[in-house]
Length: 146
Image 1 (spheres, rainbow, N blue to C red):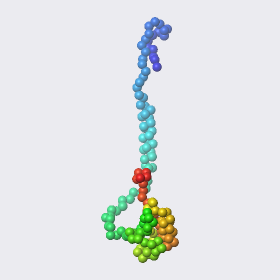
Image 2: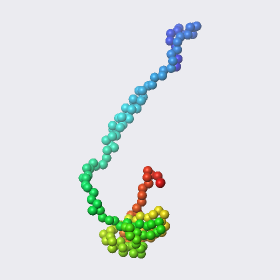
Image 3: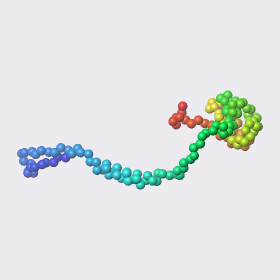
């Protein structure tokens, strides 16, 4: 944008100086946007707080009070173990009742390379005997496969 200073407007022989372009940053729109965002944040900050704040008591963990849970493991070869001891699939419900009379559910760990039929047969027998089945898995690290 050129501005002509002085001169008589007749386009005479003498030229006047022209001003260069204005290169300053206009921060007024920036301040306006920041102020609007600040107001919005101040109005919505109290809405973001939710739930009931509870200070739970701290206790020492005592290993003696932890009960041993029944865990059935299926090896890659299809062998069954009940808490580190081998067990026959046909005697599974009877062995569970003998070793864990108060148990209502069982944890099932199966190797990922095991034949799928064995864990399914174990689940069916446990369901028929009235046990709940909890399948043990391992979470992915950082959401990616290893």
